[in-house]
Amino acid sequence: MRGNLLWLSILICTLISSCSTGTPPATPVLVPVYSTLAAQPWLSGLYKCAGTTTALLRIDDPSMAEIVLRLGEPELLDTPAYQIDTEELLIVAHRRSSVQNLSLEQARALFSGFGDPSVQVWVYADGEDVQDIFDRAVMAEDSVVSTARLAVDPQHMSDTLVDQPNTVGILPRRWKVGDVREVFSVATVPVLAITRGEPQGVIRELIACLQK
Image (cartoon, rainbow, N blue to C red; front, side, top):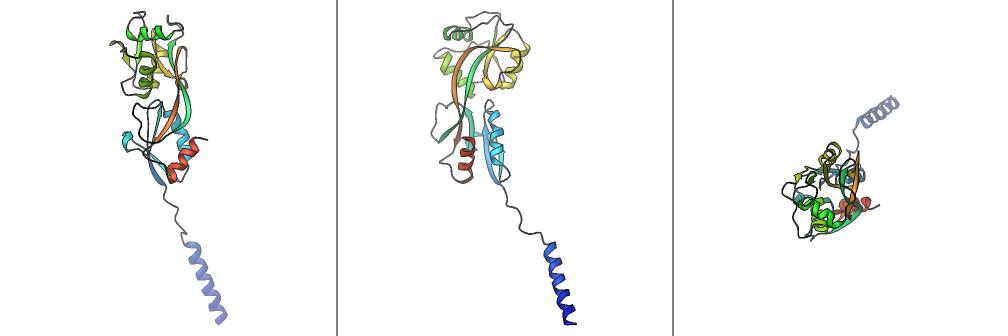
């Protein structure tokens, strides 16, 4: 009788143990991130580095992000920045465009409004990283012509240059696709991951992963 009770007790304990949920999985660390429109291709690498232990939250305010991805160094940089890649910025035209290979002076003249009047130039809004690079490298002290059209993002710029033969615009090399050709190399710049402070813990691990 005692033997039967012992085995019954063991069976009950085994059933209780098998039905228990065990240790709950760890909650992923939440990391707010911001990417400029031109730096979006590098987000895939960041998500890959995050894996399942880190949850990335994309936000619209770079000042609130733990990691900011952008092309080139901003005019004011007072927090740590780490190079994760390089990118070349190009002036691009449709293959049927009258715009051929340009010198720096010709590129500046074209975007200042002194080029072929039949060619429509496209740029980005002030403050976009690609526009800042272009202004410093090409325009110098000159201003972009007031009739220039504004592209919302590199994808919009790329679609416009592919669809409209009389256009010329600015694209990172990674965004250059379709029936277009480069007519001037603006600059090769670092792709940066900028942090709010000296990276620690998971932020440090993500930066190290991006640099591999």
